[in-house]
Length: 238
Image 1 (cartoon, rainbow, N blue to C red):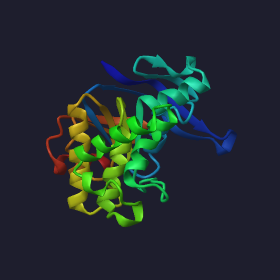
Image 2 (cartoon, one colour; image 1 turned 45 degrees about the vertical axis):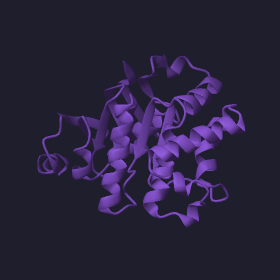
Image 3 (cartoon, rainbow, N blue to C red; image 1 turned 180 degrees about the vertical axis):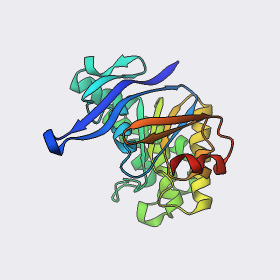
Image 4 (cartoon, helix red, strand yellow; image 1 turned 90 degrees about the horizontal axis):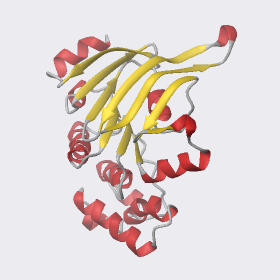
């Protein structure tokens, strides 16, 4: 089943001489259980692609479907519900709330969606345990290492029944060891049926993906299925 479809999606900012084409008729399909890595130079449109895929931004033209739902035909409230229930986000700066413990950060999206406090906490603890953080559940973000904070962010992104994971440079603030660990965790989530789109500049990490999409000047410049290795990927972004 396709969890995400972008059909000839374009995004234009400004008008006239100040007009900037962030995306140009981008088409992309991501099936459940697969990871797609998105690579490209700075300013190529990678982050815009993620915000539109996650319903945080409206395309200038084209169609976006999440789990078969056409976002253009979805109300603002239903889009918010879709984000809470189906879409998980992972950012390189973690975006954890400093006044909440790891378990509370993970459980928060469920509580906002109306899940009872006890059930939300139990789900959060299970997600943390699955990422090897059961013993850090009561720790606050400033008591955790960078790698641990990122794992908490991933647990928050996949807790409940999230089916689409969008990650913007999730390993950008981490060393190579923790970066590999993060990609391994996202890969494991895909093994549970989650669809993932991961923006990364690191060809070695992109090799974890089932497919690598190269974007340049707002359009897809090429795709590599079953990435053959970091060296072959590097040349396509030069």
